[in-house]
Length: 258
Length: 377
Image (cartoon, rainbow over all chains, first blue to last red; front, top):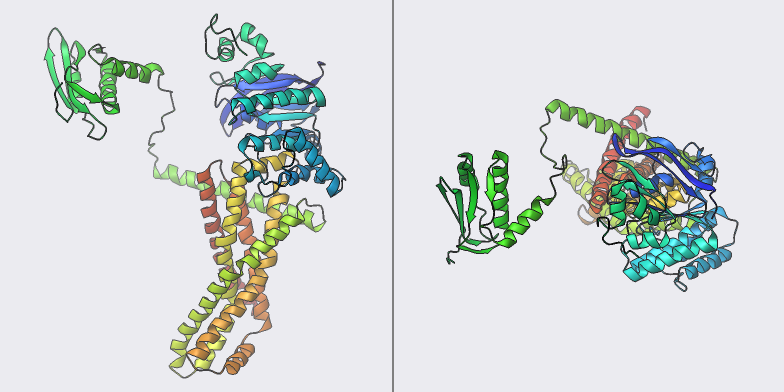
């Protein structure tokens, strides 16, 4: 792992109209990190993700990819940056009127000069990577929720992105599927060398995958801490962060996690 | 235990014990919740402390907890000590649980009294905002159309063909039914008046002109607003809820070009054809009354219609239909894209799409009537 900054967030304030959700967020994600955005329910984890992928505009501050400002980029340049992102949405968000192969093929058709048969081959490969070989011609409504999520991941990987974003990957999955997904995330990082940003509050998952993190504190409406969650569990200055990472247990009890 | 079926509360005050609340009988939600008015009166007399006697209490559920919660709350307000040791342990623990987390400030949404002026102000602001959104939407629709014309818009051909089929061929049965009946009704209304002075042949003129000038386009428009406009709003709305629209946006594909544009094109192309078809079926409806009821010769009816209906009027009606098509697609897609993040929001978006498109169609129809009159068409 290098300490080359891939994503930099500077003094970010997130607001809906005049309602400020979070203020003064500043953190850096290094290239190759598995970065976890964590915090209690309703603290704005998913909103922070939406800011990172340009679905919401910052009320203040800016987001940089590499050395380039995403917030201040021209629309065309922003489109170009977006092509380097893969996003797995909470519910999969597969386009329901298209088959799985067409879902994965759509971005390929838009941004590459590949022929339809080549696109289909790549779609089959991506589906095989997430364990869905042979499901090319299924519609999203014909497969289970866990499979939809994996198909969503296959679509997120379609353009071999530099950065993969996951919004609550384990929500709605049984413990085994969610563990398999964690292993898949680790595998992807190791093989593709992608930077991975995950929104989650699953402690088991956080300690398995994360190399870096930010904790959003709903009480103070700003970030509680940033760093490796295993280190933060024992050394964070903010007691709220330590409590969260110990599942609400006080110091000294419940040391065992994992 | 007393076997009484109703809940009972009695109060006794002694100088040394303070207020003792005796709770007896069955406390069931199926009965009535006792009012705390009497308890409040006793608490207001400032006893030294409040204790409970539950020796005659039967089975209990949340109704008892609600009652006790209110009593302890009013005691806390008056700073009177409450001794809960007389309550069953289950009740004590549930009360403690309910009091464990203090009420979140500002979380309670109460009825806020708004003056009429404030309400008018709010309504004005929200109207201005939605008008602004509509204008903005028309603007981005125009940009998307311009990109389509120079061949740079991103959409799937196959999607467009499916949409054309849905908005065209699949709409024929309902358009047939409505148009035939409208033609029939127009003929009946005309026949009653025209028969009085033996001019029943002019039913053909009445039906023909009414259908091609206005009724064909308007009835098709209203049918398509309810059928296709509503479906667009529901489709785009639920795509918003399931984040499919977001997924498009983060792929760098404009939802405006990918979702809205093909729908607008489909309706813009299909509405004139449906309108022509509706004109024809409406005249058939008129002919059914003319030949069946007024005993006119079919050939006479045909010749009368052909003489009355001018090509200009037909073209005018078809033009109106195209405009209505764009209006329906715009309002359906706008409401769908504005949809909130819940299933009830999808329902609201659908309703609002149909209302918006019908209002727009009728207003446009009125405007056209004036303009066409002034132009002498």
